[in-house]
Image (tube, rainbow, N blue to C red):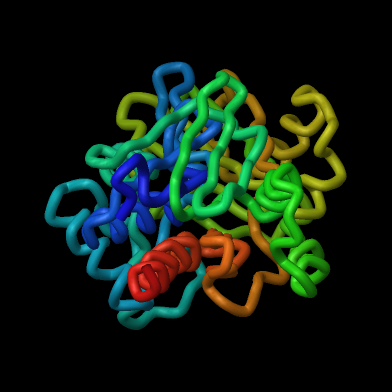
Length: 325
């Protein structure tokens, strides 16, 4: 343990970083998390708009691993999450697989995890320094954070750029492969209606349109009880094509593609860009560990594109560190 400061510093307070910190803190380590955003959760986020609440990133999560299911059971008992559905329209019947969402929004989960952790938001790290036996992260605010171990869980391209500031040959022959990992861009349209939508239960639907891959009614989902608000997710191809288009161009095209399901008049809309959504070719292991530097890279580029993949990356990272430190 570090008697002079923090044992472990985690950059990125998404689900991977938060679960990693939770596991490590349970093992007795002191852990500090830094995130450039105003809040925790990464793409597990919920937005307020015109009296509505909308999940505009991750829409739900599943659990196929008992370690992640154990956390979900805790969150269910605490009233933080609930089962949203087991089947979408068009899916085959049968027992189905539970899809969970946050009560009041997807950001309920990261907020719950962060409540007992040392998290510093709006702290953008702009430089890393590796000394003989510790790391120092310097932020735009002028603060410095020191720790024995460094874990970086931000989207991999951002992690690689940040590690360049340390001036180390930290990855050796693996750097080329890490740089080859690519993400899809994401684009969401957030749409306010003046009445109910035409979406069938449970209020979410996968689409095979050239513009849209997903549509959800946040009122039917239970997080926007007073206002009907839709979340439209573009396909990766549409997001790429219209990444720099103004909302006045891409918004109406996405809304037009959802016309069949609107059911009421559009009152307002806005668009939100996600620079890093689905990793197309994730790393074959749950993390990248450079033991001689006390450095780990983790997150969805290692765990896979689903919420559970990122969560397991954090859990397995904590387990690996606990066995070695």
